[in-house]
Image 1 (cartoon, rainbow, N blue to C red):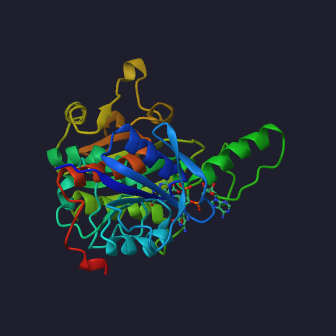
Image 2: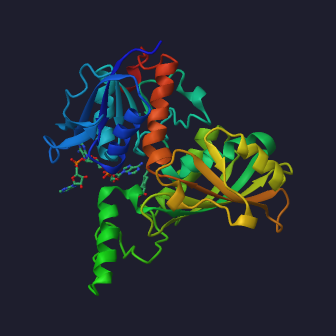
Amino acid sequence: MSRPLTVAVVGATGAVGREMLSTLERRNFPATRIIPLASSRSAGTTVPYMGGELTVQELKDDSFNGVDLALFSAGGSTSLAFAPKAVAAGCTVVDNSSTWRMDPRCPLVVPEVNPQALQNHQGIIANPNCSTIQMVVALAPLHKAAGIRRVVVSTYQAVSGTGQKAIEELEMQVRQMFNLQEPEAKVYPYRIAFNCLPQIDVFLDNDYTKEEMKMTEETVKIMGDANIKVSATAVRVPVFYGHAESVNIEFSKPLSAKDARAILSSAPGVQVYDNPEIKLYPMPIEAAGEDEVFVGRIREDFTNPNTLNMWVVADNIRKGAALNAVQIAERLVAEDLVRVTNRKAFA
Ligand code: 25A
Ligand code: L14
């Protein structure tokens, strides 16, 4: 069934785009040709691939002729403008921006959780928000066991989620402060070095941020259960790679910490790191550069019945973005879903 493909990466020079290229390489994705695309600013520069270099081309209306599959991570406005053009050219799109996620025409997929949503796709498949992905990988097997009613989550999110410019901003501010200079904040509204910012993305009418409401809405769509309530507080912390989350989960049935540990230990894509006796728990410095979602600090919430607490950590650029997108692409190949005839939705 697997057939060599031409694959485009849109936003190939960015933090996520580069990781997409290295993930395709690392996982031996069956591509005969890889086309790195970015804005005119980067056209002509090169990106590393398979021990060599690929020349970046400017993203244009005709970039998708002859392309089978495109992975997009160049921001929402680029996806809005170009994903329908790619589909019209016969290409299937896996999009990492938030633009298409809640669109009923687009499956929103985490392969460990809802791979079935890929059947009947119409050309654009959405990759969920990074904080949502790592949370649902850990929640889905527990939901199956005891039925989740409500989740209260606080996130500790790395700057790499915002892209290359934010990584450079944290480095620069640390250097400036070390040299007794005034740190400059351009990407974030306030200094991020040695600080925490309880704002990710813009504020909405209900005083939650957009990032927080993505976790609420995307979780319901991915888990396929409108009764799961999620209340989130999303916080930026001065970490380069790896998002962490403190998650409080109320179930409709009792579930012991011991049983939850056992369930998560055999769950796909999950590694349990949980032993207080030897101070074993997941941390961003260890999750960075890894593929799995790490879970620890699993314990019963003694203030409420049928409720557990846990701590979930993953590399936001890998499982939170590039890896999940490539895993979706792998599923499309394995199930012979790269080419679809049902493309009128985005015409
Ligand atoms: O637009 P949004 O939705 O607000 O998204 C903002 C950013 O968030 C990141 C991603 O940054 C995105 O640009 N992002 C989005 N979703 C994400 C997710 N789920 C996410 N990050 C993590 N998880 P990024 O740095 O990772 O990637 C940016 C890539 O997108 C390319 N790009 C941007 N606009 C494009 C476009 N490609 C095609 N057409 C467009 N219109 C971008 O390529 C990069 O590959 P580039 O050529 O624009 O930039 C290459 C390098 O140039 C530097 N640079 C960026 N902006 C400027 C600049 N230099 C000078 N002037 C500028 N204005 C950067 O260092 C960049 O790496
Ligand atoms: O919706 O700045 O995928 O960390 C993920 C990264 C939103 C911004 C998304 C960040 C983005 C976010």
